[in-house]
Amino acid sequence: MEMLAKVTVRGAKFWVGNMDGKQLDTGTIYTDVELRGQDSKGVCTQALKCENSAVVKSVINNPFPFIAEVTMIETSNGKDGGDVKIITGIRPLQRVQEDKPQKQAA
Figure 1 (cartoon, rainbow, N blue to C red):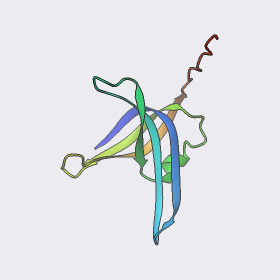
Figure 2: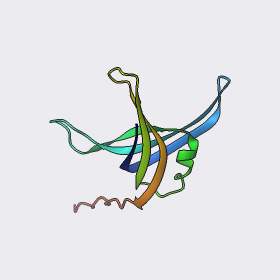
Figure 3: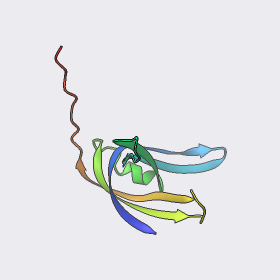
């Protein structure tokens, strides 16, 4: 199933090379995910695999963090925990302006 999502991208990495005789072309983006549960508050970062390094290379020179629209496919092996999301495209929308910590008076 293909879907669109709007996410806050905090970071990204890619790698192209040969490992153990196998040619690899990988990428990962790191997005904000809200914590859930009675004893949780705020957000954490989730790694999402990309189809290949080209997805990450298309945004690696943008200032981070930024809000983006991502296209992803979701597949499953039919078992619990077998769901996989793979980012196939990413389109930056706007930069996130982070609040700077306030200095506390002594």
